Length: 97
Image (cartoon, one colour):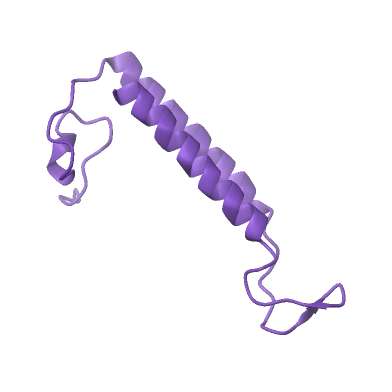
C-alpha cells in the first residue's frame, strides 16, 4: 500500500507535500535520473560514513585514558554526514531550479 503522506521526489505531483513552493517545472527524464543518481551517491557516502562509527561508549567510560561522554567520539562523522546531506540538497536544488 502506498504511503499517501509522501510524494516521490521525481514525481510530477511533488507540490502536494511542500507548503513553500507551489509551482514546480516538470523535470525531463534526464534531470529525474540525475536527481536520483545524486541522491543514491549521497546515500552511498552516508552509508560509508556510518560504517566508520565507533561503538557507543557508556557515559564516563575511558577511551584511550580519556573520559568521554556519549556521542562525542563521532562528532567529526556527524559533521561529515551533515555536509553530505547539504551537498545533496544543493545539487538537487540545482537540478530542479
